Picture 1: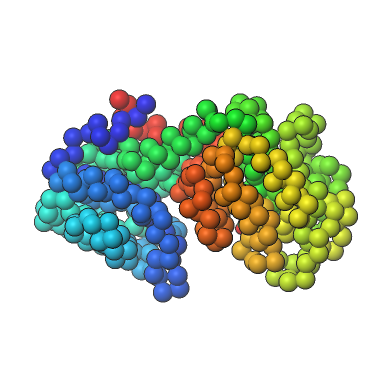
Picture 2: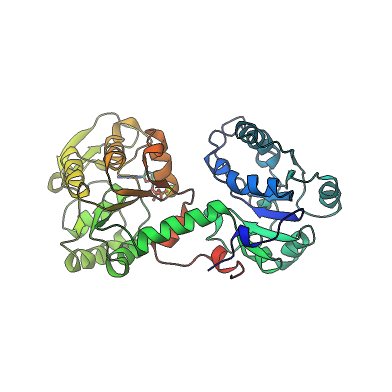
Length: 396
Ligand code: ADP
Ligand code: MG
């Protein structure tokens, strides 16, 4: 078991905290959703109360190792300060346009006890993603201890996630712990029966997830929707028109269907259209998908069938939207599943970046037991993998 922040002496220390403030930005570069920042408040409050000087490390967007003026971390000062004000945390928050070196060192020295300094976007430096030890060394020189409160980036073997953790006394922050514990418990000791709803697009990660849930976790039922179900339709022998599907996974899908027919639930009807941009929709049975159309959502009979299965669940894990929820004509399936989960007495656990965004879009986030901030990181846990960011932390 990893060391917790509470096991670390941070009183009046300089603490380097990896957070994941990779928040969505609008055209003007303003932050549009602060959920990921808000989740770290328990950790930041604790550090403030301990009189620590806290240096925050995060990436933002995809600058690919170059300085991109639209992705600087100074824009995060205001939302963080506002959240502090709302929560009654009276701390100074500032940023510095560098990741290490004299300028940062000078600012660290000036930092008051309990204060916060955002360092520049970690991905402005090519060494971050390469996990170059020289970058981790530069960070280690700035601080006494390291805390990881960025669960969403913990599947990455990057300098700010794993490299630095090995150089300083290290521990998991509170939101990191909550994420790992909640997701791990949902897999290892869920209230039974455990049903999994899976959709979205990427077969590459979903196939190992399905296998892990069926073979290791022992999930009772897996309900499939989204573009992913199209590959299973092909495996079932249905024509899918011009739908998105992945030919290379058809044979694995067939094998899974043969082996686990009683535990895999596939859509019986779907919403089709000429194109994603189209508003002209039609509901058809899965054995009657027109050759000129594409599947863009699950149909109403499917939703009803899913609701029936899920009504008996002790735990429901959901990853992957049921359709192209970003467009209203194809939102119903995803919205319907979200409503079923919101009304269920089961523990409801949501993982995946787009799935969380979909639940947010239909304003049901508060009705779920837990919505993970981790996209790829939550999927990695569902696949049964360990996360490099967890492995790198000191053991108790
Ligand atoms: P997550 O981020 O939650 O893990 P994914 O990234 O795998 O989920 O999938 C989300 C995307 O899948 C959404 O952008 C959605 O539009 C798309 N999608 C879902 N169903 C379909 C479909 N039938 N055809 C095309 N795209 C789909
Ligand atoms: Mg996604």
